[in-house]
Structure formats: C-alpha cells, structure tokens
Length: 598
Image (cartoon, rainbow, N blue to C red; front, side, top):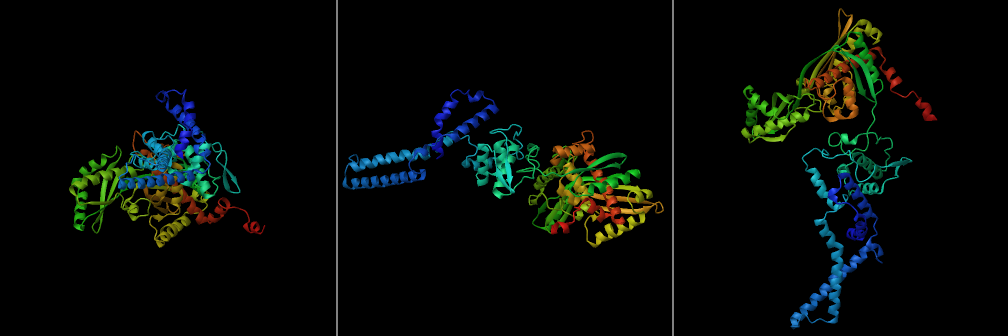
C-alpha cells in the first residue's frame, strides 16, 4: 500500500521539485523545510487503490490465488508433456491463457511488493516515522558513545511549527484541538506504540515540541487531564541527556528566603523550596536569633566522596591478600596515581576495606572539587580495578557499587566515617534572645533536647537522626539549589546538642553533620532556577581560583541553616507553640464540620 502511495504521488512531487535548486546547494534549514513540503505532498496524494472496485486486500487475495493456480496448472501440464514426449513449445489455447495469467499476476505482485523493497534498499525513505526503520534507529541510539541526547541541537525546531494549542479540558477529560496534521499523526503513532515515546527528542530535534506531543499522547492513553501541570516556559533542551527523560512538563515548588544567616562573619539569604507551611518562617526566626547573638561559626572536618565496589574471590584467604595489598601504605602512591588519572580534580585520599567471607569491599574516598563527585570517583575506582586485575586476575568484580559507600541509604559507615562534607556548626544564644525571640528559656531547651533529640532518638533506634528536623531544611535547600534530593537520606544525618553555658545564662547550640553531599557544578545545578539560587548564595558554578571552595561553602551554609531550623523548632516545642503555629500557617481555617453538613 505504501508503494502505491509513493508511485501515485511521484508526478506531483516531480512538479514541485522541477524548479528547486540542487540539494547540495541548500542549507540545513532549507533542506528540512523542503522535506516537510514533500512529506505533505506525499501524505495528501490520491492513492491508486482508491479507484479499485474492491478493497485492496480482496484484490491481493485474488492475484495470489491466480498466480499459484496457474503455476500449479502449468507445472502439471509440462510434466504430462515430458512423460508423453510432447515438445514443450507446443502449447494449447488453455496453456496460452494460463501463461498470460501467470505473467499478469507476476507483474502485479512484483509491482505491489518487490519495487518498494528494492527502493528501500537503494534509496531509503525520508519518512522518519516508518515503523520498519524504528528498530534500526533505536539500536543505533542505544549504542551511541555520548550521553543521551548530547549530540542533538534543540535550538533549531524542524519538521513543523510548535503546537498552537494542545489540550482542552472538558469535564476533566482531555480533548485535543488545533494540532497540526503532522503532529496529530505523530501523537497517534505514540498512542499506538509505533513510535516509542522516548525517541521523540531524537527524531524531532525539538525538545519542547517532543514534550508537548508526549504529554498529549499520555492524556489520550490514560484519559486523565494534565491541565494543572505547566508545559510552556521551560527550557527542555537544558535537561536532555542530563536531568530528566521523557518530560511532559514541570512541577512548580515555591521558593522562600530565610535569613539573613550570619555565618562565619558573612550574611547569606538562604533559598528554600518547600510546600510545608511554617518551615521557612521557622528557619527565618532561627536566623534572627543567631544574628542577634553575634552569628554562628562553622568548621569543615573532611571533604571526601566515596565509592565502594564489591569483589569476589575463590577463597577468603585470597580476598584478604588483596585487602592487605590495598591497605599497605607502600602501595598507596601507586594506586593514587592510577586513580587520579581520571580527573583534574579527583584526588584519592584513602581506601578502607571490609571482608564478608570471600567477598571484599573497598571504600575509596577522594576529593572532587566543586562537583558532588559520584561520577568522578566511579571513574577513578574503575581505573584502579583495571590496574589490580593484572596482579589479581582471579578477582571477580561483582559491582562498581557494593553499598559499602553508602549512597542514598541510612548507614552507620556514613555516620561514623563521613561522606561528602563533614561539618560542625555552633552558636551561643544569649539569654535575652532566648526569651524575647524564641519565647522560651535556656533550661527548658536543654532538657527538651536531651529527652527528645538524644534519649528519644536512642529509644527509637535512630541512625544519625539525633535531631528535630534536619531533613526539612536539607531537602528544601537541595531542591532550590539543584542537588540530588535522594541524598537527603545521608545528608540529614545530624546530632543536635544544646547546653547551658555562662552559669546557665546563655545557650550553646551545635549541629554535627558528617555527610553533607553537595556540589555547585553538574546535575541540576546548571538549570536556570537552581543556578539563580546558587548565585544568590555566591557559590554559582566552580571556583577557578580555589577549586572545591564553592561546594564546601555551600555545605557550611546548609549546616548553618539546619542550626537555625533546629533552634526555632525546639523553641516552639518547648513553648508549646508548634501545633498552634501549624494550625495557623499550614492548615485550612475552614470549619470542616460545617462544610460537611452543607
């Protein structure tokens, strides 16, 4: 059927292309526009099968039957002639009719199937939506050497203009309107599964248009409206191959400002992305108390990202031999030189090993500059494993990560050894500030901290959770500044200490956070909104003069913000204000009993 469509429109295409300049002289955009014009001609041409008195499948069946019938008849007649010694060139009238029918049916079948097959080999179709080519295209995409979408120029929309209007919602059911003809065909091909949704960016070359088409297809498949999910106003090219796959829009999270936070003699306005009422206001009150008490101070204890592969040996003895080799100080310089080849900023600091039977876990720790550093340390670890394979050929690398790292999971190894940036932040709050700003007193806060954050957490079997709500502040800052929100798990490890000092007049408060995992380059930090929040803190991108200083500063700001949040929440609990404030700022004031009765 496709072959008939191509041949039926060939004359019209020739007319349109008669006055065209040679393809070699056309620029990239002109060639793409011309391909679109030819595609519309191709789609709108009259099909040859439209003039047939019967449906095309009936005609095909008739010619198939005729072809095989006359072949069988002629073979039977020729076998009889051979047995009777009759010359084959002597034919009867019935045989002449059979030969004519054979030739006619053969020409029809060859024209319907054969020519299109030959053309597809020597002159591939320009129709990117041909389903027969999908498998080949997808295999090529999946075997490329660069990150997904890295080689696509999404700044040049091709094939069709942007959608005029995508969806109209009627009774919460999405109804498509004003789609271009080509976009409508693409949406249908996605809905039917002919075109994979994840391949739209690479096939269209327009990331925004791909997101709109994917969104429309999803609404049709699910029957659910996405009217509340914004689509326009976002640079989808910026996330391609780096932040998110198969986008259909973006979620809006409000960003509030807490501060100024006076930390190490400098003031910072801290951006917090959250949907929890009172969180920003509470943190802001803590910042005020810190400011009025002369500011907080921070100390960075260590800076090292980790990765721990797992290897298996035939015996525990053999695993121990590699452990002794790796932990031998005489071999460290050799291993460090191999590791450090992977990056300008990645520098191996230590390797700690643990054995479980015949399995060996090696925890590599290294500095990573201003990047969070997971990919950086992984490349260095792979270099070391390849090097060790020469002396330990029986080493079976089970996985580049064996969870002894440990990433995005609560783990004692992170709580004890640290991961990322380990920071301690402290402040001494004056007695009058405790009473006027925090609305409580020093003794009550000290007692509450001991019974809640220390004893209560111990009773619960907490792992790194000896605090009031460190994860609240960490998550809000992480989302605002483009960090990995999942790493809130270990980054929120925190122990909050409160102690009366100066003869019980003032309150010393500290937070110790051993595994804050942040970066100012890579990942979500390059997005416009997140980059703006980093710029607000003065830590945007990498510090060229002192590599790693921006990410370290960000870690101390996170710890300082946690200190402010802990101070304010603990004061609210001590004063009995927690429920009242949440009912005022984080709940509806409507009387639900009256609403239900009405």
